[in-house]
Length: 138
Image 1 (spheres, rainbow, N blue to C red):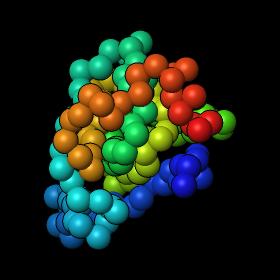
Image 2: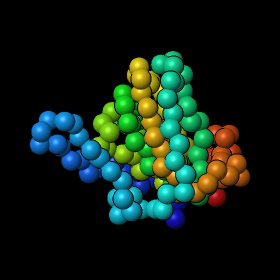
Image 3: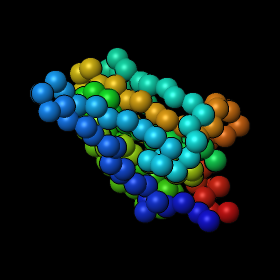
């Protein structure tokens, strides 16, 4: 099955509001995202004029959470494109395999945490957009 833009989802992350006004707490458990977490990484101190990503994965699934600040995620399934702004730490973006992604327009102090379905494997990456498009037409 080929993944498309329609397979990308915003997932609500549970939020507990402290009744004494001491802030909020959110958590991720196994039933919130549809994969076992094998790797966690985060991006921070990204200059506002920089972009990150610029790749797709053959098998890896990711769940992006904006822990602080905001940034835009440009998504492309080879035929359709859309941009999603992430700016709430209780909403995460599920990106299935086979979706090209780029992130930009990072606000000051933005932090993006990514939960990944597998360990880093260079062989899982499409880093060339033309190669990605060719794969999507097979």
